[in-house]
Length: 341
Image (cartoon, rainbow, N blue to C red; front, top):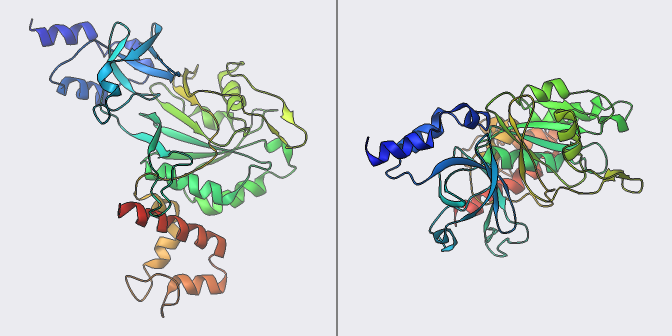
């Protein structure tokens, strides 16, 4: 047996424990294509301040990264959800990612170009993103549009989860409002006082699936995780009477193996939804405006004052709401600025 074959045999990435964490044929192909395999396969379950919690489906332990990761531009730094190669307690390599949920780091926008100074990678190798929004003061259609754009921009599948449905006699009105801007994206109503929406959400948590929750502080992500798990696995705090929402308690992004078979990542609240790279997120989040734009007389129509503009006509007739168009226009401009960097 060659040294490479011996290394792959020792790693044995196809065994069932790793598959419970989401290992599949795609990652196995990435491993097989590597020229050198150093160590065994594990998945990053959470990122701590100075270490990483990893697991192989049987055991979990704390690791650090090899020194070359700290050299600027040398290595892709591990994030929650990454598949890595580990030698004892040192991460040597990050396997190629299927995708990355990332944003422009808060407070790092370039003043002149609109470009964030750096990227914040939130999680890797995600199958579905639960965009969690509370039906309290957190509810904001423009923020949902922006988050949808971000998720689409990362080539990920979104599901919109509206929590705290018990706060309203007719929460379906909120659901309808979101469906009007979400089109084919699933919208699920959820409540901490009953099982509303749980069956639908559990369908995304099948074996081998990885779900990331994304939303503001206090929207009920940890409560939702507890409900889906069937017991309290994440700390929560009482709802503030003055603010109608719970205070933020989650301090790190952590993958949890769920009884349904999949992995669920709870995460700290996101205050600012900003973009790091240009992509097709706007087109995917605003298919109605894209369809209207195709009817404009001029292919390079800016939808401001041009004759024969189908978008302007839709705004005038009320078919298209102005705040939705302004949201589209703002994010389209941001993407154009990012594409010129």
